Amino acid sequence: MQVFSRYARVLEADGTPMPVRTALALINDRLEEVLSSEETEFDGDTRWALTWYEQFARDHGPFGDAETLAKAKNTSVAGVVQAGIADLKAGKVRLVERDELDEGWDPLADRRITVWEVAQHLIARLDSSEAAAADLLQKVGGGMGDRARRLTYLLYQIADRKGRSRDAVAYNGLIQAWHDIERHAARSEGPVAQTFEGM
Image (cartoon, rainbow, N blue to C red; front, side, top):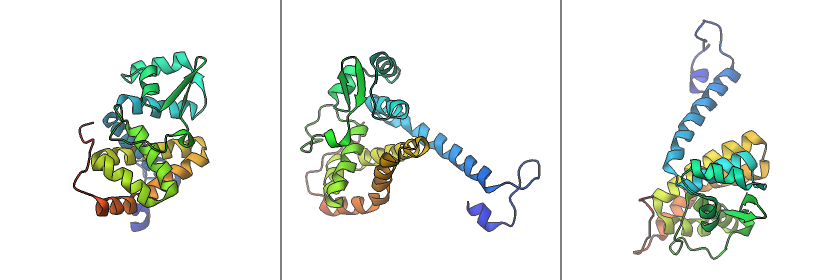
């Protein structure tokens, strides 16, 4: 967009003026490529949840679809259920809602922590206060926090594209508050900080 503001005209390869709509489409395509390539930094459970969210939102979907997707993401339906990010009942699978999350969740005691969980818990805690979200960020460390932030960007894009305005607002809220949360977390860092840098 800086190009459009800097020059009188921006041209297509054939010499015709490029409309702003075309430029925005190109920018969004490139952004999606970059963000999609970041998906490889996520754990298998998170990659499963991201794809499931895109296809089904938080609605129920068939077990067969969930299992096929899980195999492709190097996890299992039992694994994502054990991780606390999905629910399985009567042959149907769905993502756990944020209001169903365990308010007392402690990432330091979680034996199968996922980037998905961290992002969802950060949003839930942000609803209480930036300080509550910062406390969680301080516990999980900057590496895991950064992956959760990148996941939130991807989720915002999906929610916005699919017209899931409630989710888009929640994801955008975390993105907008991120620098303040980081600042609070840096101030509250104590001598015992657990991190999940190796994930």
